[in-house]
Length: 193
Length: 193
Image 1 (cartoon, rainbow over the protein chains, first blue to last red):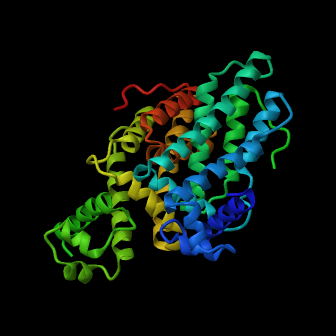
Image 2 (cartoon, rainbow over the protein chains, first blue to last red):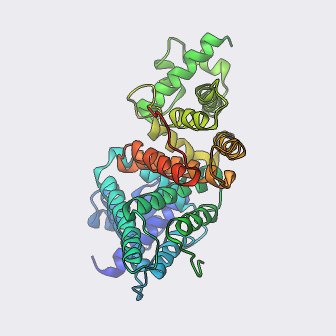
């Protein structure tokens, strides 16, 4: 599968998830959001689960690329992490709802669970690394990097639920995390979108 | 509807949700978990949504009753709150998964959303009140009660997701919250189940 086809399928999956949710997602509906036929989708992906596994993998890659920053400054790395995490979705669709439905499927689909575990570890290691390096450089006060990272990522997980279940803006949690980091590390983010 | 019938219907709903999830929940499956007929269920509840609204209301009542404590000591109130929140579910079923599916339905069902907003406000006010009273009594260090409450409840929301999506024990988040409260308030819980 060339990159263009792959990209088209995954964009179509995003739109179909926003439109129909996980429960209403079918290969036909994904095909309807693309210029490809259902047969072409099945040629590349045996099952809906296989396609969603590739979709989650692509989401992780995009998250990684948003994390990429030229700076090695620990504060700027934390800023970049919060920017990447709290960036508004690429459109106004119901993607947070679909993502929560997918998480609720994790107990029944090992492939999804592995992806969610992978992104969780990636997020925690990114925060922990910035905290550790900031403490070592003397930029931050002494702190338990793993614990700070776990708390920040757990709050982000909570923010996702609150957006869907309570219609609360994620900026509420972003503010809490900034205050928490400030208290833990003597850290104040300069600019957070 | 007498209390016994009400209780039987809501217990059956709990079991049917654990067994089939939200997507697989039908009036027939709830009836199958009880001694009542589907017709009797429909006599009491016009729709599945009405029944689930009553079910969420009952969950809130039970949570309230677990919160009830004779003590007015702010530390003991926070202990009671954490005990009630992190108490293991009443059986080994998949209730956390069903609850997350229900939360993902909140954007489409005002009745569910109102219940989730209600329980969120109840949780935050319980924590904020204990923090405020503890600060006023000099038991705790000075702290922003609303902010502490919001952060604790957001972490609890995150814990629910992590249990379902990552198969992580909620005791991980409980430990983070205890450390956070200790740092914020000079608070150490005495006994947490």
